[in-house]
Image 1 (cartoon, each protein chain N blue to C red):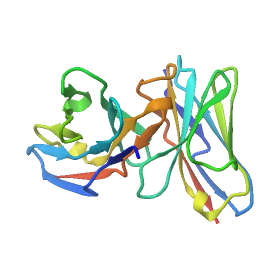
Image 2 (image 1 turned 90 degrees about the vertical axis):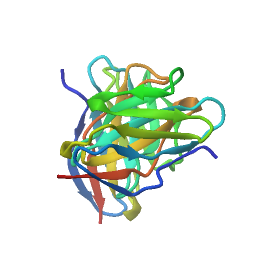
Image 3 (image 1 turned 45 degrees about the vertical axis):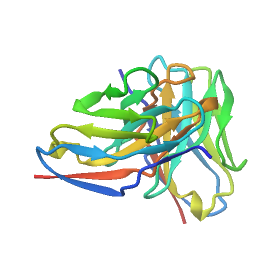
Image 4 (image 1 turned 30 degrees about the horizontal axis):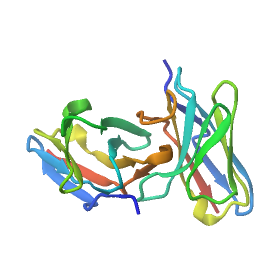
Length: 112
Length: 113
C-alpha cells in the first residue's frame, strides 16, 4: 500500500542549530513528494516539492529536503533553526489519480 | 489577492444533522480539493472537484458529498453526522489538476455533539 510515514511525533532543536524532520515513503513508480507547514489556526502552507531532477530541493523560508531513493526518504532540513520555525510539519506523497496522502505530522519545537 | 477562504470558521452540530461547508478558491484556481483533519492526524483526502465534477474521491462514505459552482467555489455537505465527523475540514485550491502545489484555506472546525 502506498503510504507516507513521519516517525517522530515531536522534534526539539535549539535555536541556531540545524534541524531535520524525517519522512519515509512507500510508493510504486516515481514518487512525487511535498512538505507543508501548519501554524496554529491556519491552513497548510506549501514549503517544497520533489518531482524529478536534483535530489536536494530548496524551498521557502530557508528549508530544503533531500530525496533518497535507496532509503525511500525525503527528510526536511534547515541549517540554522529559528524560533519562528516552531510549527507542525507534514510530509505528503502525490500519487496517481491526483490523490495526496499526508503523514501524521511532526511537531517542531525550536528552543530559544 | 485573497487566498483560499472558508466559511464558517467554527460550527457545532448535533448527531444526525446535516452540515454544509463553503470554500472560495484562490484567484485563478479552478480545482478544489477537500480534506478532513482529525485531531493529531494529517489531512485525509475526501474528494476533488474540477469543471464542476467530482474527479477523484478518497475513502469516505456517501454521506460526504460536494458541489462546485461555475465560479469555481465549492461546498462540502455531510449528512447524518456522527461524532467521528468532528474534525478540521480543509479546502485547497490549485491551478488545474495534476502535480501542482495546493493552496490551503484556514479550515472549518466542525464539532459534532
